[in-house]
Length: 486
Image (cartoon, rainbow, N blue to C red):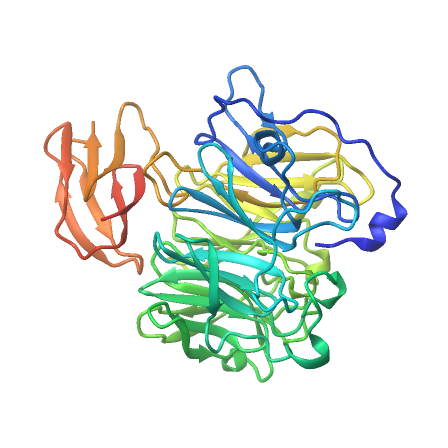
């Protein structure tokens, strides 16, 4: 969230020299925190949290700069995602007005070493205004970058933009609305694209003015659109998430103007049939906040362990920093999950910086006091909102955006392996290896959530190579979850 006015009010502040750079650092066991950082003063940053460090050395700050001397991210980097061993970091512009180093709207990093592989300063090859939003991986060769002007095809072999997804563009682009990428005032804040999900062989992307775009990744074209007029005439979409049961869920705005207001509904969409159901949010529960006015990935998210949704909400998206709500999909029950107003010291959630760990089901939430106070901490909650630990940070205007969960080598998503006692589940060529899981049922799901293979594990060490079409699958055995490519 660019905070130009705030940057003018607050004086310059020294940056503490506590940065990363250890050659042997392990970035597979912890949490990445992607930070907008201080707009008007410096480029965005990424910190790494080791939440269970036995010596209490929890934080490693500015790991991109620390591992890549002389290089930095772009300006207002809101999004990060790990795909195929690479961390994709998407910024709104390539350079903050107050920074001395140009980074990239797209930065691709080795997910295990934090070494920068490549940076792209522009998204639209024509040079027209096109600011970064998010990323979704399709396979090891292709991904989509969402932006202020549509979705763009990123070749993951050459790291070149191959063109715009047909039908995804911003209807306001062109003519006087287009400005060169060097002009940060030219962002297109009507008709932009935001969060996107890949499931059931299709990409589903939130489009501010159109609704939910359904994209065929084989043709790189929009094949269908679900407008939010299904909820109320003139309504718009906020964000889209994928729940554990394989369904899509949409948050709803009353219009497409992007002013941060909400409607008290959730929309469930079957990604295979595209059938939908509108769920009323009851009185006393605020709807998921949205952020088209200054785009972020939103706090709307899903658990990978329980069939449940979480979000921050308030009277408007501008005042949604104190309450987190939960929707139990199976029971249909809404509840308030976290109330920061009832706690002392006036802590608030910053922006969208809250996500559930895909295996432990713990919630990681970034808290702050006010925009003028550089005091931040991250709080780790269990699934019942009990505090597990708190991690104070060095004084800095971090403006954190998104927690991103790392992977072990061989993993392809944040839902990677976890040890439970001596049990292990890890990928091998064409399948998975299971250790210490005898007696458990192993289940394989496709990305739509459909069960495609089951087997009871009889031995303490088994290698399972199911005969399935090539692609990504979710494997569960006991309390362990793993995403693999077969």
